[in-house]
Length: 63
Image (cartoon, rainbow, N blue to C red):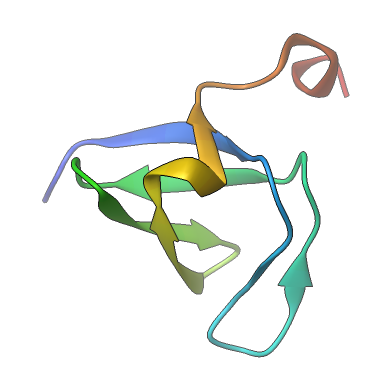
């Protein structure tokens, strides 16, 4: 299995389920490069490098 890390959405992104996740949503990221696979509660979000940041924002991690 590929290494996983946490990330934070920078923009609203629709998941495969049709749900749109707002900026600040924590995602589990797999892969590296210009595009990655991200997941929120099992919902797949194909992300480009500019749609997320690696790690958690400090104010989001305290929730």
